[in-house]
Amino acid sequence: MDNDDELNRIRQRKLEEMQRNQQQGQYDEENRKQIQEEEARRQQILRQILSTEARERLSTLKLVRPDLVSNVENQLIQLAGMGRINRVIGDEELKGILSRLIGNTRETKIERR
Image 1 (cartoon, rainbow, N blue to C red):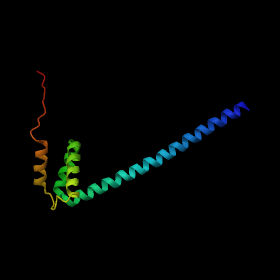
Image 2 (cartoon, helix red, strand yellow):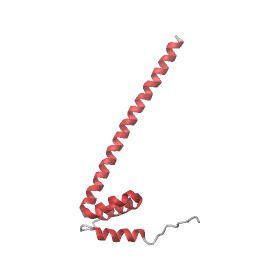
Image 3 (tube, rainbow, N blue to C red):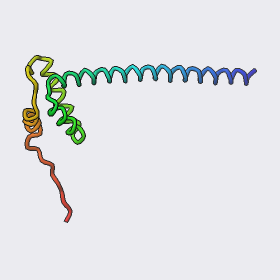
Image 4 (cartoon, helix red, strand yellow):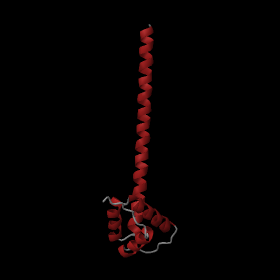
């Protein structure tokens, strides 16, 4: 009897663990869908306010400076949401925005002699 009770407890714990894992999997899937939908909305807005060349520049820059690109995208999307962008931003204008954001910051390099 004692072994049966212990076996039933183990089975119950295992069943509860499997149910928690399944619920977590559903939660993860819902989060993944929400993130994908949000990214699709962001890309749609960026397609409306940026020229093809400007979008390509951001895509290329994202490989090296993802934090900067994310910041620029967020600012542009926010400005578009407030109605302060009423035309398509071209590549040259985007380069100006990027250069102002980057500013004169320099990386300090220490060379070994």
